[in-house]
Length: 254
Image (cartoon, rainbow, N blue to C red; front, side):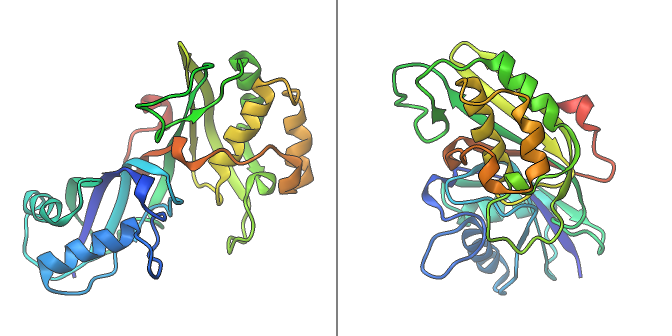
C-alpha cells in the first residue's frame, strides 16, 4: 500500500497539540479529517513529532498509507482544500513502503523565539516568549555549549513520560540575537518530552544571571527535572525541519 509523506506548517495557538484527544481540537484530528474527506476512508496519520499545545511548526512531517491514485501535487491541493487556514500542506511525496514519519527520522531542528525588550508584544504575542529584563546572550551561549553532545537529558524532560531512553545526541545548540529578538536553535537525533522548552527556560535563567553557565554540568549529572530551569512557554517554539536518510547534514543547513 502506498505511503504518502506530507510536509506541513501550522499555527498551534488554537490546538491542544498534535495528538488526537477527545473533545479537543488537535492537528492530527484536523489532518485525519481532511484525508478522510479526500479518500472517503478513515486513515491514521502519523506525525514525526508530537508537538505540545500551542507549539507551531514550519516543517512538521506526517505519513499515512492509503490506496488512492493521486499525484503529490493533487494530494497538496486536495488536502489544503479541506484543512483550516491555520494548517497547510507544503509538499507531498510518494515514499517506499518502509517509510515511517516518526521512526525513519534521523534528526529534528527546533527554534525557540524570545522577544527581549521592556515593552510587551502585540503582533508577535502568540509566537514568542516576552522576557522584559535584559538577557546576556553571551552567557546563554556558554551554557548552551555545555549541553552539546550525547547526554542523559533526564533533567530536561517533563514527567510523566512513556520514554524509557533519556539519552539524546544534541548536535547543535546556539543563541543568536537580532536587536531585541533572540533565537535558540536546537538540532538533535531525537528530543524528550518538552526538552527544548526546558532547555530554553534554563538558558533564560542563565541570561538573567539567576544561574551560572557552569551549573549546566550539575544539571546533567543530577538526572532530575527539578535541578534545571523552568519550562518555557509553548508559544515561542517552532518545529522547523525533520531530516531523514539522505537529508543535508545539520552543519550544512543550520
